[in-house]
Image (cartoon, rainbow, N blue to C red):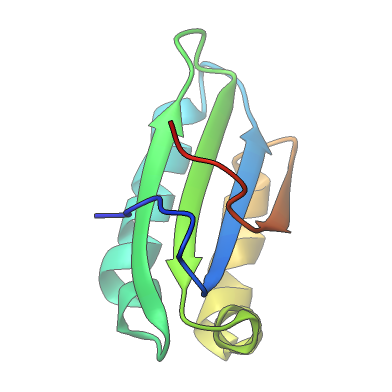
Length: 105
């Protein structure tokens, strides 16, 4: 489970997926499968969470990694490149953005 803290010194990645209500649950299932079979097993992976808005038009993925390079290495694996091609078919697009925690209340 992700823990959000100002003293976290790893890499936080928030990815937003634009999807449709017809594809939202398929997208969630594809992301859950990717985490179960691949992502969670990668070096440097700490935790992640998946979120869906109530209109089922956006999915957000919050993940934590020990280092930025760990996240980038995961994306370059042949398994994730293949999975991301499939995930891309289930949404209008997605964008991972790297963040640093600035405050927790």
